[in-house]
Image (cartoon, rainbow, N blue to C red):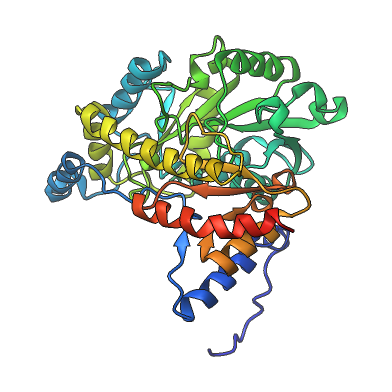
Length: 399
Ligand SMILES: Cc1ncc(COP(=O)(O)O)c(C=O)c1O
């Protein structure tokens, strides 16, 4: 590689980002693969089955139309905003004005990363759950703000305890991230929790950003609520939706923000200076996904994830590893045996079983004592994982 003839030292804000915590497990995984080990990867949270055919066809049709080839409006097509508003109304009972309360985003990750730029000044505080999707923390740091961790512990159903947030932190907090169904814990929140959240946000003047990426991945007939269905939620916050996990479309980068019109306007202002809107063909693809009849496809996908969840959880429980079946999300959050760290457990599973699981500490310090296993790999691979985990778990028990 040619040496740089210019200073390439990273800016302070980039240097301030925490190190990538999966480095060790990643290099161990590469080492094992290089040795020819057939690694079972329970690490990835990325749907392994394809996007439904009618969605792909709608995209192909829209891509052929030259009317869709020019710069789109940042605001998005009315048809796409209306389809998102209708979806939220029929599926969650949430009411949003498509003209002012719905806004297209290029996957929810970029919206999560950009929103603090609109509302948070250096020195402000952002409340972040711990463990969490790591982008909440890095977005806060990139905006020059500080994060205050709200630990998610099993005894509280992995919900934050707002009473534990110190008074001076509440005073300085401008924004709060939440995510239910939750990555990585698989926990869910009920309407009462969202009502408490609105109360807390109002009392302390804190913007709520609810990440609803997994709202459509649920089991046993359970329907997770939308934050926006809570009374007065649109007075205090926004919710980010995504087609990624909802329609097996992680590669397509389609989502939307919904909720408070002024908060949406702030996000829109940031984004109008950074990107140039969503390819219109993708917006029309979203209309097909949200308005088409995919209920039997969804039922099949739910049945598939349910089978996998049951194979993994029943298999672990049968060997004596007590894990709870998640009600939603495609993650199993498993406590590691007493006296072991998350990294020890994940390292052992990989080294002695050829199975990748993510150490809980990758999601924050409060993830210590857990590992995350994902259901987005073929069912027979999950069966294979169980066979391989059993002897490793037996060894742990006989320590
Ligand atoms: C909790 C959570 N939020 C957001 C995202 C990002 O999703 P998107 O594909 O919409 O950017 C992910 C991706 O894994 C996630 O786990």
